[in-house]
Length: 301
Image 1 (spheres, helix red, strand yellow):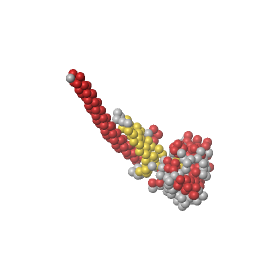
Image 2 (cartoon, one colour):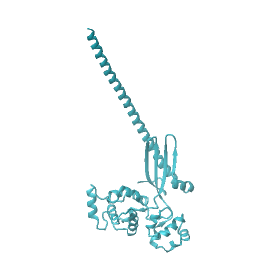
Image 3 (cartoon, helix red, strand yellow):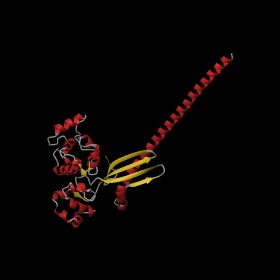
Image 4 (cartoon, helix red, strand yellow):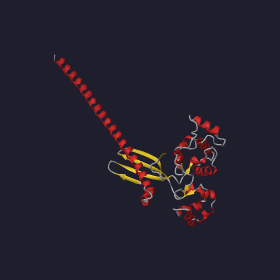
């Protein structure tokens, strides 16, 4: 009889341990689920706050551009150094980049499909900085307008279709779109090209193929067939308010051809605004191009 009671007690102990283990597991699972739900809720909240904060950064960019003429010092400071505000919750950074000192890729081909020889030459020259063969830009021209006169249509079409799509037959919307057009435009190569190229005229706000001599990097100025030693002097004596100041400080520019001269401007109108907002561990980034002549206009980019 005693042995039977001992057996029952042992069984009860085992059953108690099993039930206790199950209850502990259940409590742990519930606690984990609560933690996951709270984490997801916080992540969603932080993401929403970061997105709203990034949008406010773009609004700040609009305000900066709209008031640039009234407060040139502030505008130039933000253009060079950017703006950043931080607190214990997160941060907001705003940066401006002048698009008017870049070459417009979309200008390599005219609306009727004919090649714009001047712009094509400049784009090809810049492309050689990253070892992009000149022939690759003919495929880009076909992507923009499949009426392009060069004999690249069949080869380009075959390449696009091998990737599952046809040519856009419209202007590029982003510089990164080059990665879709030819295998030589690898993402890391395109990243190196971005400081020199723009596609901003796609959104209806017309930007001419003129280059702002006050903001263009030396590589872009060299692509305009300006000798490197003159480019060095141009940069050293910037800024210029017009051709008179340019000729006074860099007399060699008086002798450049009318074609070269017609491609130079002294003001900027289009700026890329980048707003980066961080709330705790969540970061949201918004990039857009704004028309300084009408800061309410967004040119998505």
